[in-house]
Amino acid sequence: MWLIWVLCHLSAPEPGLMACLPISRAAESRFEFESKHMGTTFRIVLYAADKEAADAAAKAAFARVAKLDGIMSDYKRDSELMRLCAKFAKEIGEPVPVGEDLFTVLQKAEELSKTSDGAFDVTVGPVVQLWRHARRTQQLPEKDELAAAMAKVGYRNVQLDAKARTVKLLKPGMQLDLGGIAKGYAADAALRLLREKFGIKAALVAAAGDITCGDPPPDKDAWTVDIAPIAKGQKPRSLKLANAAVSTSGDLEQFVEIGGVRYSHIVDPKTGLGITGRRSVTVIAKHGVTADSMTKAVMLMPREKALDLVERTPGAAAYTVIVGKDGKLETTQTKRFAEFTK
Image (cartoon, rainbow, N blue to C red; front, side):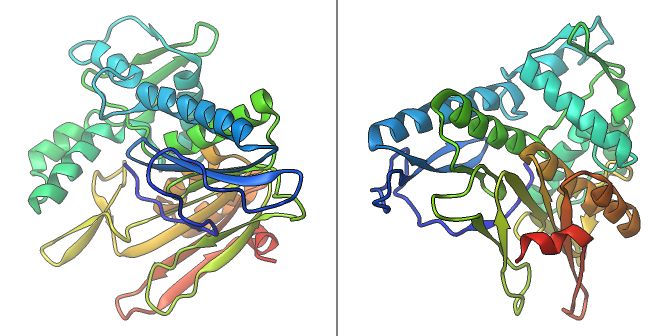
């Protein structure tokens, strides 16, 4: 799973799925909820007329996230994703029909793979498995193991048929990993359900660092979201978001140091190696699925190409931080980023 860390201006609720007491006396009051899904804690903040309405809406939103977890997890052997990959474990078979959610995410992934020249690639699963083992054992993957895993990587080996809504994997043993896109999609889906089924427009859904915002709270023009610093001495940066999403990727916690080299959990699909050095990327976009996935692409692409990709994406902005060996910070931001810090 990708580690992403963004801190919201939200008070911490008690563990489990429960609502805090309303903290506003306006016509709509603020309620907060949390529930564990996709290997992290999802939080929902929403404004509703009363506790009963808020409880019902949050329960339905978390049920939607749980369903998506059952579709896209690469940890659950019976997930739709894992069943799809199992169909092609030993040989290339016929295209497999899949559900709308899984197909939509695979389409979004394919689009970004093309525009990022393969920097984002959900077929990197076999290599990710090796690096998960490397973090546990503190040993680099064997060269032959890495080569065998890399032979199964390549987004062009995923064949999508939109008309039939089918997927075909063109190499036996391919493993798809949606860890860099699924949480953003799930946050979008939960927010959409709150709006369309319950009429709740002022809401925020946070999946660890993947945060999707709807309309701002009553009497506010935006939600305030803080980007956590990557290094000592760096101050948090506050963002103002409404009907937008933000995601941050980096190696603050998930990394392994072997032979004096620090390898991130974020794997380059072109080399099969975890990226080295300390860095973080924050992307703001219109939707969580875009912000979530684009942080990984920007992390791996050459700087100028990455910033150009963000600039060409409507409504998107990015902020990057690289920590040098001397501890000095090198920061870069796209032109639109300043619009969200005012």
